Structures are given as structure tokens and as C-alpha cells.
Picture 1 (cartoon, rainbow, N blue to C red):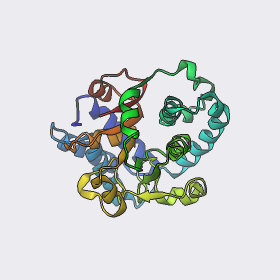
Picture 2 (cartoon, rainbow, N blue to C red):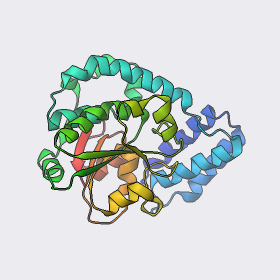
Picture 3 (cartoon, rainbow, N blue to C red):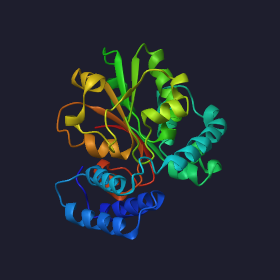
Picture 4 (cartoon, rainbow, N blue to C red):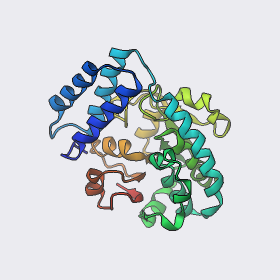
Length: 275
């Protein structure tokens, strides 16, 4: 998905937030704004610009993981939310998809509005027939592309459901920190590997994924046409550029008008769709 006019302010807000968390000076922020203006055109994705912003800030500050405290708080609050929400969703396909989508709400978690996260108030849209057709393929392996650190905790039900179908699930996370995405360092820090051991690396520290960067196990899985589930908008924005015939199940909260227009579902809603 290419950048839209909606994306520029979001990218500038990202630069401001990351510079603040990195203790970057005003010159670095100004250079980020100049970079956004220079790159902003119709032939680039929002994650591609975001990745260049993060690289510029890292190189100027030496801070590898400015979101570390934010991730700590996110995981802590997500665990509290799990206690309140875990038994409110059925353990069927629609229920685990809905629960997984809810995990893509880190902004809500960080406001500590756990009571708001009520299934009855959740605007959820699912292309259930298409998803059932995809996951009931004879293919045994499933690749889940993770997103934010708290997403993982809300994906466990989905993983267990797929394992109950006889599927072999691989959960891919970033190799190194970027934004509040789950990375290999976080997996061991939060002991997520004790919950689910089959966690692999995307091999990069970039928002979303780029086909040319795929290597090792994740490349082998992608090229073998396994069942793919992608969490979050960054993965949608990048995978939609692959231009191949692979169907991908996307699970996310629609947090901006650009994605809303792209997938034809309302901003603020949660979706599980096939694209």
C-alpha cells in the first residue's frame, strides 16, 4: 500500500515520538521532517519511510530501543487485560480471531481503559468463510507474522486453536527492536518462549516485511505457500505490495483512514480478512 495524504502527519508524529523517547535534539527531528518530505511520493509505502526515520534517529542518538519502557508497560497492562477478557470469547474460529484482533489495540491498553475492551462494544468484521477455506487447506504449516509485543499474548488462543486442528505454527517476530514491535530480545526478556517455543525471526529490524529481506526459515515457509496470518497494519501495508497470488489472512485494528479506505472497513473497527 502506497502512502496517502493521510500518512504524512502520522509519520511526523512517529518521528516526534521516537525522537522524544530517544532524547534526540531538535536538529534530528528537523532532519526527520525533511526526510519525510523528500521521500513522500506515490511510489513508497508508509513502513518504508518509517524504517528510514528509525534508522536516522538510531544513527544520531545511539539508542537501539527507545520503546523499551513503553513495551514493558504494554506487556504489564496487556496481562491485566487478559485476566478480565480471557473467558469472554468462545474457543471457536470466530472467537479466537476476535480475541487476536483485540490484541492489536495497544493504544487502548496504554490508556488503561481495560473496561472499554468489552466484546459487546467491539466493532468486529470477519470474512469467516474465506478464512475457513484457507485454514482448512491440507497444508499443515502456518506462519503467523507478529506485530506489537502485546499481540503475542492475545494470539495464544489462535495458536492453540490451530494446533488443535493439527497445524504446525511458526510465530515470526523482528530480529532486533523497532517501535513497540515484538523482537527476539523481547521474547526472552518476557519469557514468551516458555509459553510457545516455535518462535522464529524475520531477520530484520524493520516495520512490516519486505520480500527481498526474507531468508532462512521464514523465506522457506513463504515460498512453500504455507498458510500465512499477518497481524497489524504495518504487515498489511508491506504485504499488499508483494504482488503475488498468495492469500494472506490479515488480523488488525484499523487505526487510520488510509487503511480503512484500502480494505473497505470502518476506521476504529477490528478485522480478520483475506487479501
